Image (cartoon, rainbow, N blue to C red; front, top):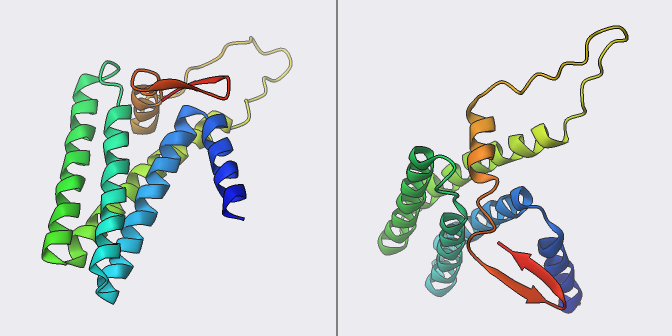
Length: 171
């Protein structure tokens, strides 16, 4: 049964677009930190540490996905935020405290919401042009979500690549 789940997950990852891959990473990190918080309440040190290690590794992957060339200032700030989250995970683990872990979950959820808005903008139906109107297309208004998607949506492709069963991939 678990082989089927693993195959499905692997297929989902291999067929996902870069924005969806980032969303998957955020969801995985949130889930790992939430599980770590549960293990903290249960006083299961080994399980808590394992989940925090998992979350930390996911955040490292997110750091590697940042496209530093698109907007150096914004990418520097995002990298600093990821670094801060890493330090808070460590602090929560060392102090056996829920506060830093809850803070990381909230930060990850906020970033995931921004990525969800990016995806919603990509899948929004195109506006129809009334008959007789000139066919001009206006660019979307600049804003934090559009800037975020432009800057980080293309961050994949420069980090990792390989071949799996004859299918080329890059992250």
